Amino acid sequence: MAFTLGSHILLVPFGVALPAITLLMHYRGLRKGDAVALLLARRWSAVMAVQFAIGIVTGTVLSFELGLLWPGMMGRWGDVFGLGFGVEAWAFFLEAILIAIYLYGWRRLKPWTHFWLALPLPLAALMGAFGIVAANSWMNTPRGFSLDASGKPVDVDVRRAIFTPMFGPEYWHFVVGVVLTAGYVIAGVYAVGWLRGRRDRYHRLGFTVPFSVAAILTPVQFVLGDSIARSVFHKQPVKFAATEIVWKTDTHVPEYMFGRLHADGTISGGIRIPQLDSILAGFSPDTKVTGLSSVPASDRPTATQATIAHWAFDIMVTIGSLLVLLALWYGWCWLRRRDLPGSPWFFRCAALAGGACLLTVECGWITTEVGRQPWIVYQNMRVAEAVTDTRAPTLWTMLGLVVVLYVLVFGAFLTVLLRMSRRWRLADEGAATAAAPGDVEGDTPYGPRPLSTTGGKDGGGT
Image (tube, rainbow, N blue to C red; front, side, top):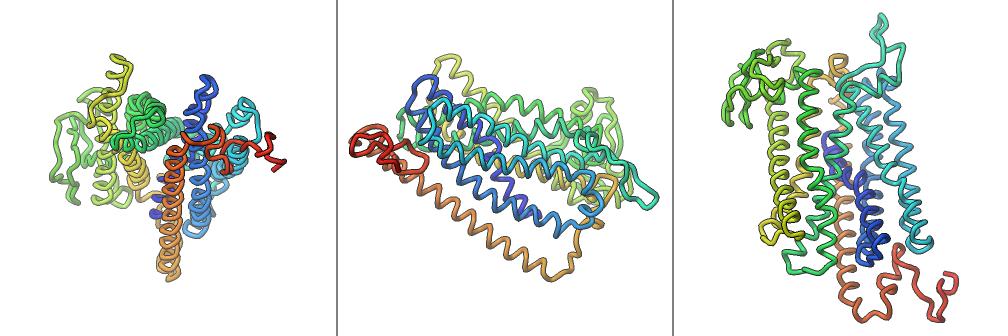
């Protein structure tokens, strides 16, 4: 599950955010009559379709794994929090339909009709995120049920099960995070082209729009990240202790940047900042922070698990802080000169920002899941009670097959993207000698309707 979810989550930012960024570029193209913006939007829509197809494979594997690997959890709690997966499934099918309409609408619909029909696409993507985050937030702060004498959930209140105390902080942190991640990744592609000397308007616009979206959201995400950390402090104090490697409940607790927690509660390595953990948690050095030793060893993460969650959290915070500086650099130059920064170091950093954001997405998931150990449903069911028999020999065979499948799928994904990029470069190089601007890429499904050789508009009805 760690392998498949860790792989699938790399696609999530594009599935959720790429439609919105594409439509933003599409709107700019229509509003200003900008052919370059429309060309970018059309090409991004093709990437969106390919990414969605890959997500179908990886997402389907995850759906099967919920039943195969976690029979204890799904059997007992499925009636309580399963609605989130149902919402995600409906959103998935709706998004598939809308992507199909958008992709082929380039050739068959009037420009503004095409745009307005695609406008629900980002909403469908957000609805899918709603379902998944609702399920995960319930696992962190389970609500909306009572337990009978045998420990089975009864009197299920679906509304409370969906809108748990952690849902709001998790959802907005997740949504803003995936949008800025997609923005930085897309902009990074054009930053590389800029560094290679491609200084045309196509690369400038392809960089500026997604990077501006990401830069605006970066400080917002930093504030939301602080908010969700404080929510964990109040709602999951032991998990907070794990992410901050706090061993003993106390006030004036220091903050450790990195470092390693040992089984006896000692910490080695890292940078120690006196009292900062208490200040960050409650805005005062007198704030009491719950330590891991406040609960029995069987009810808390191990020292190794706490260290993993702590490193993942610190990596996420460090990258977030650097991205804030990058966004400020960009904003300062834009406000002063209405132009991009001239330093090649800015574009080198921008090219790396997308990969760094993907790393933070992985770290965020690790922090959420590892920090909750040993609970799969916080304080209600342990992982050992939920998981299938790990001694089953077929599990290793299954893992091997999944690894091979994912290598092939992601390899095909990258191959297709590289071929599309190469074809687009060739089209751009030949655009100057094309018969008409509308003929560029006219033979592709997402391109404009090609002109008929007899002068008709529909190529003989094809």
